[in-house]
Length: 348
Image 1 (cartoon, rainbow, N blue to C red):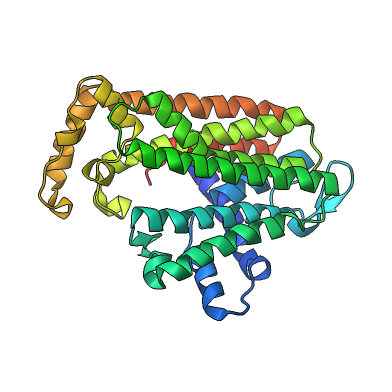
Image 2: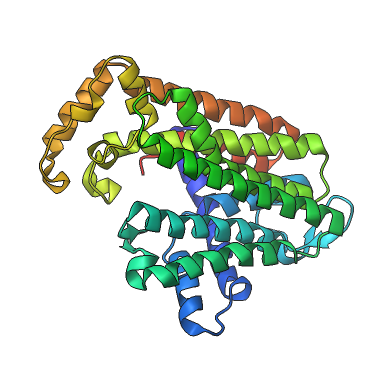
């Protein structure tokens, strides 16, 4: 299959499942009183998003149940022992946690935009945003504890999500701590990314397997798939920030570099003796030109840092794909395989 054909296949699969997830928002996250709280709670979810994590959840469920893609009723989904449960609600719980983390991240980072619209704390206020994030956090556990799966499987899934939230907080703490260090290694950065970003990809894959009563080897295999492709996803984001034109990115190219954020690229460059802190100089970050970013990228390329990050992302994606052998050999598994490849080949 050509690269273009693979990308179209993946994007179609994600789009179809995104539509399913979007339609579930009103049922699983209904409007109620107080109105302003629930408007803020639904605001970032309604603003859009790729829905990669719930897509992974649905694809893992489809593969384990060995059903045709999109053919089964996600609300009464077949477990491996004949039991039925609400797979869509489980997938929604992961997306709700993702939205909770975005709201709190934007407050901590003082970011004004998210998904092309004002961040929740800008559209409403900081107090409303904190409450909206907290509400999403608790709603996710309400959803996951009410899927109709066997109680012992539901408990395992809820424990997985709770542990994941702990890991995310640990990763965010490391991210903050690393802002004040110039000796962070690529290995330390990868561990931070695993905690802050990748574990939620892992939970997205493992939770449906737990709810379906899959063997532990399968659950841990798909979890490893998620954490590997989650780290590859973040490294690709690091690369896209440097290599994609501003118009295509929807934000300033090289913004991570301008703002002094450490990435896999800059950490490797530091190890090669590059003065990363002075690669781009400007009195006002808004005045940094495309030419200045292009010059900085040239230095990073010459140091081998762009290639280093690209190869690391490829290695992680390949590791993730190898973990899929735990799943039946069917079309949903192939889509998960293609998704791993797409995440490091995408241009946005």
